Amino acid sequence: MIGRAVLYDFLAILAASLVVLAGMLYAAVTGTYDATTFLVSILVPLVLGSAFLSIRKERIALFAFLAYFWAVVDDGPVFFDSVLTWPEVTRFHPFLPRLFMNIVIHALTALFLYLAMRESIKGTGASLRKAPKVIIILTSAAFVVAYAQNIPLTAIQNVVDASWYAFDITEKSASIVLFCVAVWLAVKLKAGQSRAGPVKIAQAHPPFLRRADSRESLSPRRGVR
Image (cartoon, rainbow, N blue to C red; front, top):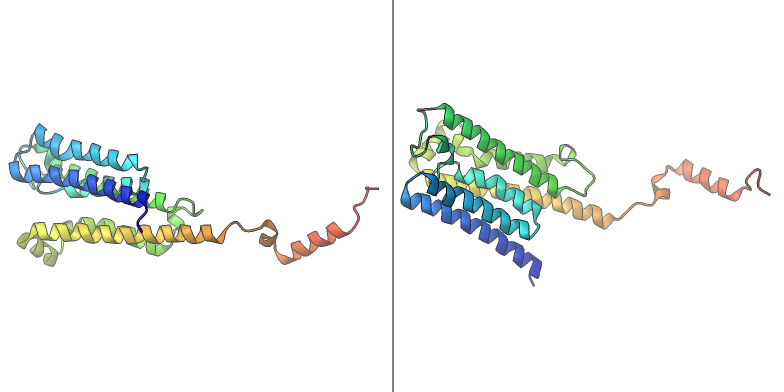
């Protein structure tokens, strides 16, 4: 039976996802890029989604939401990467504003993925740099796959040109799956360490130290009458 806390967490994630989807539908239907689109498609989903997850105090889910939010609104139908040139959606002319926004968006995704993974391994006694390599590889792969459409390979670009929306949904879904597996492994590692329990200090000493301690405890102490 699903616990009440798990159900509430699922509802919070669902609500955050729906407000993002509503903002994207608004941009797709109106096709206009102005202050109203920024409010409805960017600001409101960002604030509401973060609020839903903050109420549940699920920091891993919150950081994951903040990571993938920027990846989702990066391109169509919101085209946040062109926000500096709205209402015109640009790709190459002018190039620098879009390049700058892409750097910012990618950096935000990488930052929040890092924070999410750091949160997931908190309590294991290891830093993210010392985490199992499979967790680091999966998290890095999740970031790359989230922006797979930007990989300059002819095969990928042909698929993007033929069916961009289908490819975009596929890459984001695959990225989320990879990230969830990484989080699951990190949580499993934490659970395994918690089940092991604290190690007794005596057991942590080398055998020769334990023998020395036992002899000292049995022999009378000098200077004590």
